Length: 461
Image 1 (cartoon, rainbow, N blue to C red):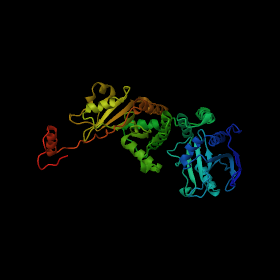
Image 2: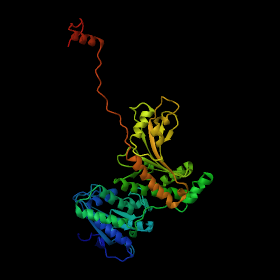
Image 3: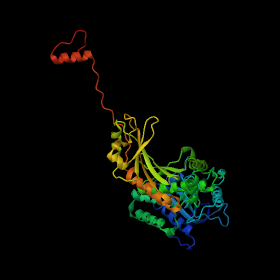
Image 4: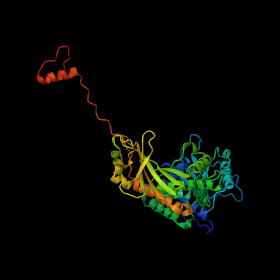
């Protein structure tokens, strides 16, 4: 470990076994995590890539805790950590060979405060530190989204990023599943930090229940079927759904051992306020909460719908029907051959050309009669097929915890039963085209076969 950076008045190297008071849970977990980044390069690369820092083989990482900066530090302004990544090569835009970030961590129920984060951003700017990274149990869609709002003019030259502890644990699980770390020492450290982050006593928390107004929201739909955009429980319900969406994407990532992305409309990716408004409008108009997840190399995105009217949760995938099969029966059988197990919750929907309505049937029924999806037009064939797992939750739908428990069971169930088996249809490669033979050429060839001379006026050969 090198000497302290010029802008630091005080700092200690991050320790795997920090000696701290029992009340210093945040400093302890921050020290443990930061101390691992120099020791497990694949983990450092995975997390720092999300803040725009590439950790190559020649990069070195230094981590400090208990830091006090020389400029702008108040008596109580002591960030939990500092990261310095040295690449040895000056960045073309900044001219600097080092990248640095202040770390502020929260654990358990503690939430980040905008005033404190703003002060740290100002301190980072005053000391030439490139970014502030916050870590807590709060969820965000991307690392460059923050749970707190501070004036944008402060972020012109200083980055503000956020990681959730669950997200960090997920990155560890993905690395372990992919055998991405090298040597016994790295493997041991990775498994130990995973064990640590999963222990309930650590203070790492997942999103586990909807907000306090969830039951009233469901009851409002049950009573009269109408909702108001200005109702507090409506905004809370959509906000909680988005938090669960982020948590569920992490759970699916752990389930398949690869990063699973929650799909957000492009124009709303960098507009959380606009996305919240769009979600509220959809909930009021359709009385549904929806999300979509993209699993690497899967046949299609998984669409998840919580229907407040019917009290159902569904997960489904829609794929293009095989156009080289002409009849409905042949196209449905093509799909059925991919589905290994029957389940009473699974239905298949057929989408037709033109204005023909969607038809559907239970998977078990279609096993016996693939033509059960056929429309009145017997010559028509579906252009797309959709497989959906639908489960009615009844009273559990209105439960703050039971709704989340069932949702987190149903979506992985769908992937195990359906998603992992579906393959997108691809048109077969074209066959060689046989050259067309004119009547005159055919006459010449026939003459040659019969031993005759070619008719006059025709070319030989």
